Image (cartoon, rainbow, N blue to C red; front, side, top):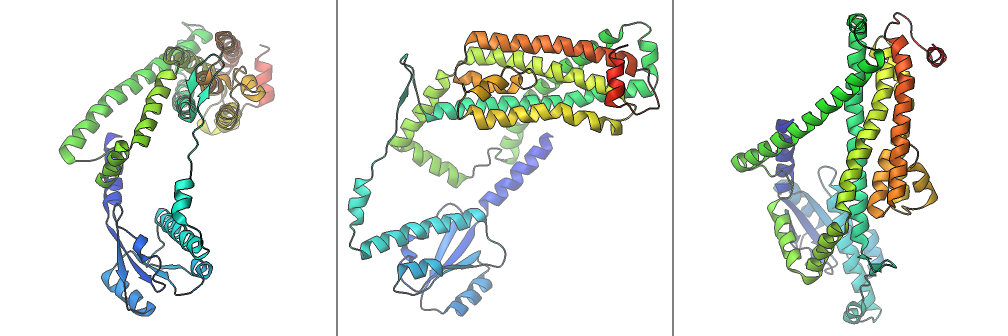
Length: 406
């Protein structure tokens, strides 16, 4: 995994460092001065040459492309007939930057032709930054909301991946023991519910241990690879780093960095840490019990597909509800309701907490999650108890319901 990340970072670095030259043929003579060297892109202005000759010259020099600005007295006509010639399809980012540069320049020219003083317009522009403050006097900013949503999104993603990876591991373990008939020997010494809980808890601890090892060894390996082979894992090339340093020297950007730091300290760090652990473990244990029950009900992984999707749907719904509702209204009806539903609360509640959720709501949501987990374990254990000894028949939802009555 570390080698794979290193290769991807190295290839990305090579791609970012690739120098590109774009030729500019400006027959109008109005916009060629706006094309300046930027990052890994260099512009070469062509003069006293026809379009066909320019294309042949660009092909001969193997430049990245040719941008052609026709000669016309009407700026609007020029804007509609600008063309970019290249051997292959150009980068979307480069095309967007070119369009933005030309739009700004042609707009200024058109305003000047209409008798508008551009300098007055520039000096008249006023940046509005609305400061935010609660009724209790707590200040915040837009950056606060971005950090809060980022935490919730990362927490939801980690929970989602953890459930998929280690939930499937639990399910495969049960199927393997069932098909090899080892399970018949094991249950002679232990109760089915104890065996199921042992699998869930044991796999959870193994997964957490694995993640910790990956983080520690991965961080060390990346530092070593970065120092020995010069691989830049951040994906930021030297030119971008210089741009960032220049931006940091700007007072406005320095103020933005101060806002970021302030926003980070405004986060309820202790509350987030405790809530993350509780809801993360609670959500994982809840879904793991489903996976264990599925593994006991089937004989092979092919038969699990009909049961897995209904389990994953609430988790997927929680991620989308969190992203599309919490950011707009973290204390709205939809966000609040889904933060109490046990199948979605591990994700939605974690997204709401950074925006300030009363402790009683967190405790109520956690209590419902734990209660649902215990109830789910009881139901799953009944399916587990019957299913681990059932062979040769593909179960249906109707049969699973019958097993709950045994």
